[in-house]
Length: 170
Image (cartoon, rainbow, N blue to C red; front, side):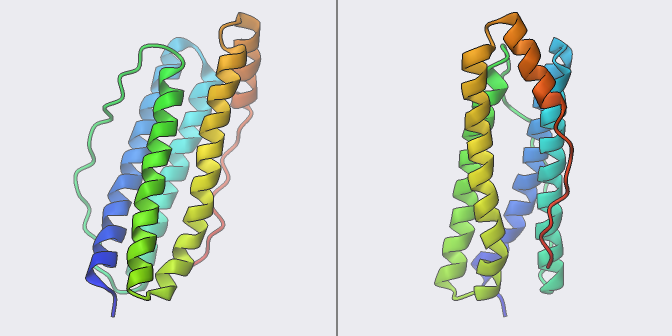
């Protein structure tokens, strides 16, 4: 039998992951409007990843006979004015999601829910990668983003990103 707090946190995380997808679609749209198709591509793929993360949580809950409740997904609230804004907001958001994952991990640990801990291990690692990627994008933009040629090259680099579905099996 699953701990109620762990089940509630897992369900909340589904909705947070879907919000993350909306947020990254918002970022993608912002960059598309700026004519930066590479940045738009990068965040479109981020949105796909977040959607898949939500689906992994859904499948985990279903596989463990836990009730899944879908809540309304908030409209992205990031105020985007310049090309750096989505990057900075993305890092802050990833740090927030890391905190959410850590809270689920802590609750599962307290409940001695080893199955959920094992499931969450992948997300803990993933969040480390997400924070590094977000931080690296900020550094690259600070180095090259004010120069038109540098921004063009960075946009081209980000345009080469392709989607790879997560390999986590449940």
